[in-house]
Image (cartoon, rainbow, N blue to C red; front, side, top):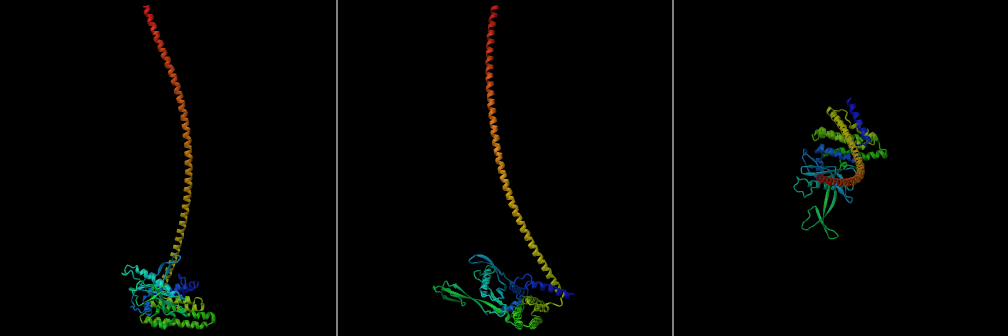
Length: 431
């Protein structure tokens, strides 16, 4: 029952990888796959890179030496457009105080040395900004190397690049790695040779890999079957012979890894990790040939699964599902945020339109109110003027009437006094 579960899980994984051109979930290109395999080996089993460093650069470190990852992505400005773009090196890390840089090359890029130089320059500039380095005016370039993965292509043993720099003063002699020379316009220049190490992965047999402890190269070795696959496709090469070669190759790897475990150079977990990464490389290489792919699956799929392996597989499945859920949640949140932002913009636009309408209506109403107020004020002023005129006229009439009455009263008083005098006189005559 357990075996069936394992094979069912393996079959599901295989179908998923076949639909993705033999690439695991989340891996977009073949170059990306090899880069990630190298990173996984270096950071999960750091001692595996030490023999490669010794092979290329001659630097020896104890097996327990730890490594510290270093940033591999940089933003650069491209001339003449001045566009900002990102560049990413494969793997860069510190060992003690020394920086190392490795690139996996699946093709035959003639500009590979220039690309490595660009990465190394960005790394050196980043290091110069490190406050822990006392000499910030010196650029510390890493020890760099290219792992050529593809078989049967012209690959140089040494990668070099000549760098010409102005020699500003003859009193400042160039070091032994530089050569002074004169240009046509009699300007003194100095030449520095920039060197990059290289290693041709497919030039090593499985036995040589085991002898020199280059086990980190094993997941890349399936690429040596590419010429055989071309023969099968174009020259009707016997598929049975191909299966036999593939089986012998895989069994040889099983043996050398088992010996390394017995010698205590690799742990059992290291062995399984290397085989797991080898399987991913083999699926990518053989994904177009169904017969050989089935042979790969048959050889590399475990028949028995330990409890801890079951737990690890289930945890990996859960983690993958959680990652998918998180991605969906992020996409949903991003979509909702975009919708909210769009609605906010619509609301702002509608609000601005309503505000403009309200301002226009308010302005019209204010104008109407001002016009009505002006008319009412004019009517009130006219009515007030009429009333004032009427009051003045009435006042004038009353004044005239009062004056006339006053005159009559005065006249009557005069008459009364006259009569009184006349009566007094008459009374005097009588008495």
